[in-house]
Amino acid sequence: MDIAVLIKIVPDSESRLEVRGGKLDESDFKYMVNPYDEFAVEQAVQFKEVAGGKVTLVALFSETSSIDTDLRKMLAIGADEVIVLRQSDYRGDRPAGNATVLAEALKPLQPDLVLCGVQGIDYYQCATGPMVAHQLGIPHIASVTQLELANDKLKAWRQVEGGLQVIETSMPALITCQKDLNKVRFPALKDIMFSKKKPFENRAVPAATGPDLTCAQASLPPARGGGEIIDGKTPAEKVTTLLSKLRTEAKVL
Amino acid sequence: MSVIVIGEVDGSAIKPASQQAAALATQLGDPIGLVFGSTNAAGKLATPRVISVQGTEHYDSLQFAAVATQVARKSGATSVVMAATAMGKDLGPRLAAELGWSYIADALEYDSGTWIRPNYAGKVLARLEPNGPFVATLRPNAFPAADDTAGAVEEFSSELPESTTVTLGVESAGSGIIELTEAAIVVSGGRGLESPENYDKLIRPLGAKLDAACGASRAIVDAGWVSHSHQVGQTGKTVTPELYMAVGISGAIQHLGGMSGSKCIVAINKDPDAPIFKVADYGIVHDLFEIIPELMATLDG
Image (cartoon, rainbow over all chains, first blue to last red):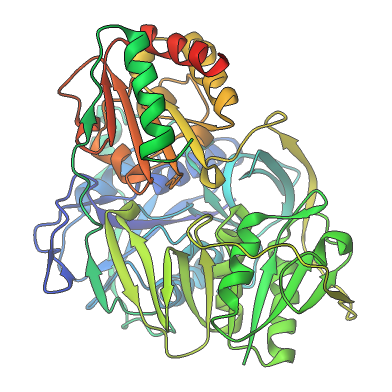
């Protein structure tokens, strides 16, 4: 079974977020593999271990930035090859345009299964996966916390309000991976060494076209000041004061 | 110009988050409701016209997107709105791709053509100004809801499109679970609780007393105390309740990203330097094992 995993390269979650002149200052961003996509890689490797086949990672990113080390780590945990699609004006908030470019790269691979994270921790649109599935004309199941392979079919447990929807699908299909799916393994030293020999292709791709909206203005949400520390000699006093403030001042109880 | 409102059924009711979409839709054009599953509930969606689709008990991305596309094209609609629920977040982008329209995910605000949506788990707000057709999903509880109505219901008369996915069933996480993203009150626990037993002994009962959803910090999810569906923060859920109570949570920046949009934040932590106090409206610097039992006893009294 051949599996393709879509990898988004996102700003590190510790990145400082500053807005200047209505635009987010991205100049100091450091980038990493989107954590949700790591669950997708781990799942792909687990399937490969039982069903054989090849795991190809497909990432779309800007022309210049280097993210080789992070992607090599994904090879070290068991993926077979990487294709990095290099785009001159790449942006992470263009799901429709990015899905078109990704789908074009996937078609010649003819994967039986496409895996990706449920969302990127940059824009949280949960959109690229379903849009790629549409472009490929295959079904998708989003926000999956458990995935089983049985007799050429996939059984997926999908996170919904108050429980899990259990869905069976034929393949090819696209699955977006939620956090509970698995624990991503740590690569052994010999796998890290070996990963340096695996195929790593950089491929130039055209600019994104699609009906994506451009952010007209970025702003920071109103800052929250530290509030009031509740005084009191005993736990009972503190609790009574808190409840009375929640009822009469904040009016949320 | 028509606007399609996709309504979601919960038992025999329409979800409040869908009534919020119905209320907003009146600002965008002439709303037409589209409800999958239950004709009885469909009539309650607050749109003057409602189209009900039978034979669709469970959400199916291929089928729902195909039906919504047909309805949107036939009615000449220029926008589709729905709640950013598990279904909306899944259907919204697929439908936008099928229609070739712009997609606005998890919108927080709308005002005369301008939308605000969160980036970086709400740590940055982006303004979007679509000038073509679009599909938008709305963050639950970010918009006021319309009241239930008793409108006329038309049946979706075309044949249902084929799908290659089958729902085998729904596994409930237990009765009376309140969904984090839709709750008015959220009580969250963190590492300060010291053990999963204390989460069950303190956070769950306090949540039950307050009619609240129970959340968790990443630390205790990663430690396996509770499932990821409880996690609030950058790799979990973003919540915006009226009241957020953080118990034994220090407040890592990734956690703050997921809850700092709450109307009122209460922090209970024995460490006065915990970052959570920087965003809390009310803080109690005290041992949570003394405060929470006292709080529950006082709420009972």
